[in-house]
Image (cartoon, rainbow, N blue to C red):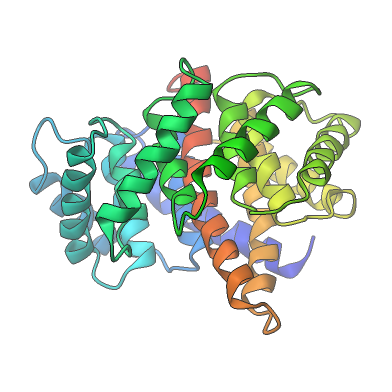
Amino acid sequence: MGKEVESNYYSYMDIYTDMRLKFKWKLPSQVLGMLPLIYVINDKKFDMELYEDVVDYIKKNTGFFSPIKSQQTYSIAALLISNYEDPKYKFDQLLVCIDKMKEYGFKKGPYLGISSFILLEEKDLDKRLENTSKIFKGMKENHKFLTSQDDYPLAIMLAKDLKDEEKVILDMEYYYASLAETKFKKGNELQLMSQLLTLSESDLRDSIVERCKEMYNIFKQNNIKVRRVLYPSIALLVLFNVDLEKEINTLKDLINRFKNEKHFKWNRDINIILSIILLLLNTIDKNKNDKTIETGLNTIIQNIIQAQQIAMIAAIGASTSFTGSSSN
């Protein structure tokens, strides 16, 4: 295992230990497992006093029927602190974004807060949300019973600088249909996977599908069961063009480390997701420091980094629904 990957692992465990001591009776283990990753992804030092202060601020400034409540409060606080110097001010702006989303017909629910976080740097909210409505409508037309509030975040991402919504919808449907013809099973997770792959803005769709199949086979060959909750993580591995054959031993080492941790040994799917994201961070850091990256590619990378956080929250949310709030 490389030094950077190992360093990220220990940073994660240090933050997790602090958070668990404080919040183990307030949050399910899946959510507790996700929060430290937000800090590690953004290379942000964890400050418990600041975190509790922002959590309290959010609670005091949201009503009983707010879409930001319960577990969402803790996720939003981590996202704001990790990405901004003035998280309280940004939270006030986030509330404005939430109201704006409601104006455009987006329904109140657990994904409204996370979705609004993506809009914080948008200068033309009306245009972005108008485009988002087009993308979401297209999703709904293709998958009426699958498309719901959990598709808001990726619809917003795909709507950024939108030039041709029909192409976006066609690409998304191509990935969904093509992957469903292989070993990937239809459902919400495959829809999220297809949305993430569409972020690549690549015309090499067949190649991307083949890479997904290769990733699937490598997991199977190494006795890692590919449950649906892992589909978004596989998409991220493909988007960052990770050489999984080369990195599989590092990934298995990470998975085993989590498995041997007292508070992680029963969360098999979460352990794999955590390990994949820690592996991806090394790739992200390399891309950030690559001076040859042009503005267009850099923008895509930044979108994918943000998508990684959202996909992580969505995937762990999905896993929570599968396994329930297991004991810490």
